[in-house]
Image 1 (tube, rainbow, N blue to C red):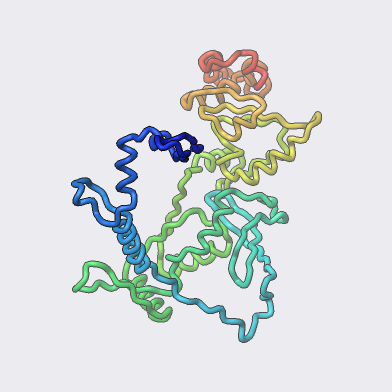
Image 2 (cartoon, rainbow, N blue to C red; image 1 turned 45 degrees about the vertical axis):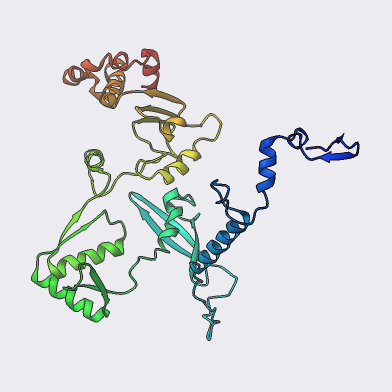
Length: 361
């Protein structure tokens, strides 16, 4: 605070450092007397430490903490004795590769520096993703630096003196002989996800024929219904049909996030974007969904439905087309009309205006 000038009893001027000092406050006087004590306040019967003792403790604690600091082992950079021809220090190399994530396949370009991959990008020349990438595909670079990856065959042996297992390295010849012996003497089942690579399919086929292996396929997402529909529609269920959104002018989705999670969203986003150019040929997207999705947020029209109302949407649209508008060869069949008649009021049950539902149909 500012200095206050006053005259003391003797008539000489004096500078006061605070109002408490000017008023001769008892608490201030007590603090001033104890401010520069150099020994513990045991004699004054008060708790606390003097400055000197406090500095001693702080110095000792800092000295003790320094003992816990361990330097990292020194690593020396060794130059190439014979540098590989394709490696130029400071210049990146680019390699074309592929990456499969669930039902999505990506053509990728991997950027490397002196053999270390540092970036994964989409390959613009690949016909599927066309340079696009998902967040999971971008994050795949982290799995290439997994410190827990095996670099050689390991054999776990149980030490009777210990409760944990020790890991011992073995040669590839020893590992091959042990594995082949096991495969010949036991029944073997191979569990994989859907295999899309022709070369991996050939390896699996050779493995099955050599050891009589039963191959089971399991996927996190079940597309058996789509495969059955493809077989009924196209006569084949060997693979899922590709959605050609780049050729569609009017797109209706029913709880299918085609731009976010369904089938191959990266490819479908690129195809969908081709038809979104403003003009008379611009496509239109209508979404019926129970939860907000990326597809619903980009739709021209979005209708909220319950998950239990998906069948009402499908059958209601068919009723509008076949029975009401007669736009099918089935319109003259009484059996078809009988099946579709219960869905004549599907729009009302879903809380959708009849006019809007008819326009979608």
